[in-house]
Image (cartoon, rainbow, N blue to C red; front, side, top):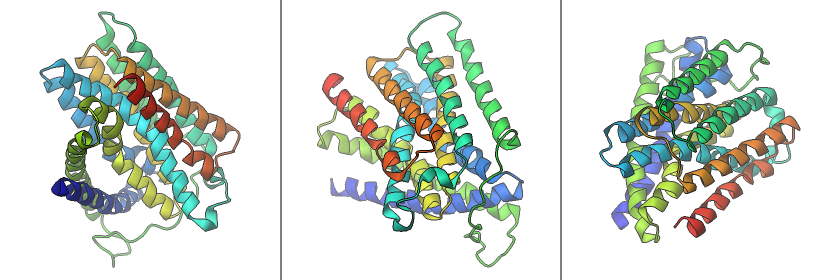
Length: 334
């Protein structure tokens, strides 16, 4: 038990440190390739941290030999957006609450609410469609997976082109590249090397974290199914959450929230497409409960954004929705 807890804590520390290198490197990669500041968060950082999770889903649905193993992939496609739309946003709110200088400011004053609201509305439309598909069975359902991949491609194109959006918020200057701290203009190769190496460390440390969390579950009296529904999504979304912590701490709120919304778009499309390709894509009652909480969280976010009323306390309160999900799972689906 002591070894498991030590590995759990140690892997979390390694993930955080690797995320420090990742967010630093990905900002320089974005600058070198002419990617806007917001797109760095919504596309580059989100794709990098969500890629390992998508690989896990791919392995589960393609190479899983039992229905239970394939269900892990389907659950990941629903659990990721749930954790991001509740806990990840709540962490951003908590970071503001801990910063006395920004405590009484509206978070919405620090970035383009129009852009984030558009991202959330885009996500909600895709998510509702994928949940609806989980309620019915028909022969040509797998072909609809291509629609989800096309939706993500269109989202990426829109983010990279930045057409129809307000100009990026002016953030703080980039910190020196950690691998080349004395270089004012580090080469693209160094920036890509640092970002890629950090991503590899994040991937393996995250896998270690998930495995230790699965071992802790039985000690807490949780069945494997409950661990998969309640704890695993938190573990798999830990890199996105830590990225948000780092960027908020640096005063780059747009990047932090953009990273979360961009990761949500990947989770709503790529794993869903894989699930449609290789499984019947029929959602269990527990997954539908999680989907309902996710949709409620996004509706709340949209209302707050439309009213320019996104405060630290209200964002932190999003954690209560995850608590409602956990309580419902424990009472109804144990």
